Length: 222
Image (cartoon, rainbow, N blue to C red; front, side, top):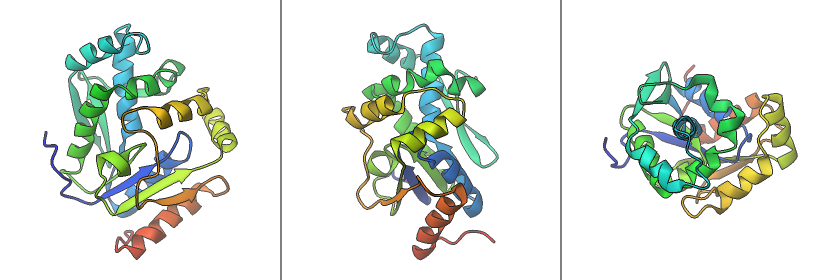
């Protein structure tokens, strides 16, 4: 797959866990008729492969890289969403298990893993206009896109959202790991519009993004 610059519109939505970026990005993509890409699910899909192989990513990063070299990673488009199949499989609900929650940030900070998945992410924009959410989309994956957003919320609100989803990962620890990793740390991309979603409904955040995009010439479908 090509790793050349995007040939279609890319809307980058970054932010920490439970900031609302996945739900917001999916709705914005639907309103615009674009494809939705969750890079978090991509990293979770590969983390699932690592777990299935019995590798501890914290103590054996070399083992993770060895698994990566033997893993077939292919995009899979379903409707307006682009996912990854790993070795021909879709892990499904296993991607939100506690086992994956506790390991995905460890796997995602390994440089070889990020390089391989960033290549897949960039390739997504060659097929259609996309809304891509993650932690380094505006800063690393598509730094040249003019459509950049960073969603945030208080740690307390984000922890409540995760609990409501039945997920028990530690928000503060994931924030620390994502912000302090050496490769592609979580940060506000240059030129990104920052939106605090703590006191906003999902619909309000979606309309805020669409309003900004409309000012830049991107108008939602009727």
